[in-house]
Length: 337
Image 1 (cartoon, rainbow, N blue to C red):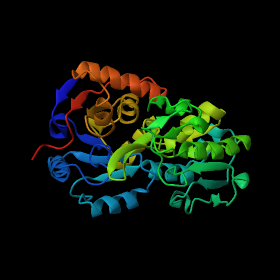
Image 2 (spheres, rainbow, N blue to C red):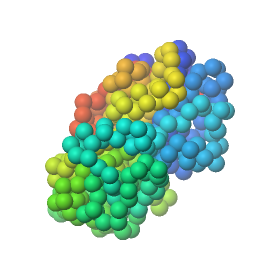
Image 3 (cartoon, one colour):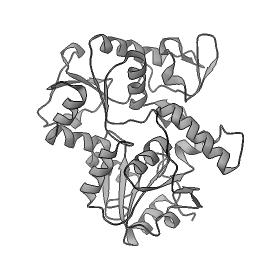
C-alpha cells in the first residue's frame, strides 16, 4: 500500500476514476476545500470521472443537488451514478433478481419512514398504504419521531457505553442516547411488526451509519444498512441490498459510463468503497476524511499501521464482513490550494 497526498497523485496511472461523495467530496454541509478544482483537474486531464454514491436519490436529482453546491456534469465529472438509480434500473428491467433473492414474487411495496419514493415511479410496482398489504418494504433514511438517530452516544439500560461497532448487535429496546432519546427503540418496534408479518426489506443504501450535521456538529447517524443489519440479526428477517460494496453496482457503473482501461475507486469507507472495489478487481484509494477520519480519532496510536489495523477491526465488526486493504492511502481527496 502506497501513502499519497491526494487524488491527483493516486489517479495518475488510471483511465477512469470512481469517486464516493460523502466523506470524500462533501462533509454533509459543504464541499471540502479544493474539491471543485481537483475534480476539474482530473476531468481536464482526460480521465473519465464517475461519481459513485450510495445515496438513494436518482442520478438526475443528485446532479441537480450537487450542481447547486458548485460541481457540474461535463465540467467536474462525466457521470453521477447512485444506488437509487441502480435499484430503479433493476425494478424496470430485471425485477426477477429481487424476486429470486426474497424467494417470492412482488408487485407492491410500502415505504418505511417518510421518503421520496420516485425510485418506484413508472416501474409497474404499486405503492400501498399499509404494511400488511405490501409484498416488501422499501427502507428509506430512518428517522425517529424527533428526527435523525445518533448512534455515537448510546448506552444500555445499565448506563454502559455502546460503541459504533456493536450497536447493531444489541437490543435496541434497551438503548438510549445521552439525552435519554430512544429512537432505536422506535425502529425496533416497527421492525418487530414487519418480522411478524414476514416482510422482506429492500435497501438501496447499505451504509450502517453516515456522518450528518445535527445541531451544529458532525456525528454518526443511523442509515438504512444499519436497519437491515439489525433486522437480520435480531429478527432473522430477509434483507435485499443494492449499492456498494456489492459488485453489481460496480458493474452497473462500468456499463453506464463505458469505463475502459484501468479503474481506481476513491472512498472513505473500508467496508463499502474499498471492499466493493476489491471484490470487483478494481484498485482503490482510502481518504483519511469522512468515516475513516472520524474513526481514526478513536485510535490512541498515531502510526499508520496501528490505525489501519484498528479501522479494519472496526469495519469487520460493523459490517460483519472481512474488510479489504486499499491500494493507496490518501491524506484527502483534494489537492491543497
